[in-house]
Image: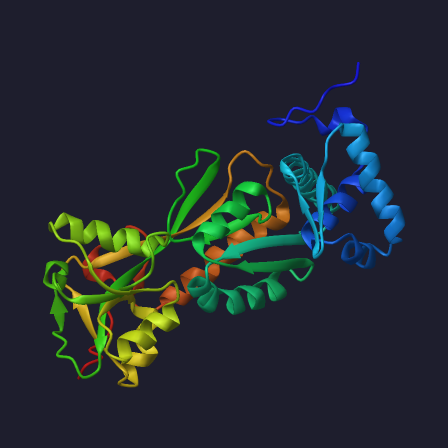
Length: 337
């Protein structure tokens, strides 16, 4: 008996589809163009168009909407693409794991990083993997934390390092480190060596939007003192936050490592937050229910090693291992002297 399409949980295996068809359809969706997908797949465009029509006839619903600029998936097409992406990723992981049983770990691993973490971690991680596991191909995807978390849930990335542990029981979260946040000021403002968060009441602030985990943390700290931030500018870019603070628009709160070069060059002034300070954690996150390949385990192990080395050498400035007593954490130097 032929199954109908269940838009909540479609059973692809019962639809007579093979992996090639799923790859073709997913390529069309991700390219947003049948022509672009045909060039990438080296398949004639009429053949791909026929492939889509056959899929739509089999499922009894439209999968793509044709527009002058290309194609976009319908609701059913989005569901099929999401399930196809998960199935193809699982097949690739299975093949890599079986082939690697008798050899060194190999295969492709995709890790999602935020921009600030990627700036510190990407190069040393790639170098360490090249030395330890040369048969592993690492792909790094950088974006804001919300996008990276979404990619993880959708199976687009295998591992992620984020500043928030997502409230998703399907994800396994391991703490990597904690980093100290500081208040930054225009260089011509009077910056005390230390400041309480409550002292920012009434100070114009340049902050990321509420979609950003750092902003939520700052708002929560200020709310604990019964105050709300006085916003000068909202912008989701560390580099632009620093530029706006340097130009005199207001103060801000960022990780020390993100502002150390500008502070040492005299473009910004910095104040530490009074003890115990303000710290945020970074987490290594992976899907808890999804099988983990040897290559993914090797990347996770190497990542922990690289983070430990960055902490030991002080490269990840003003950061400490999880659970370290505040008095032993690395502190920023007096950048205002």
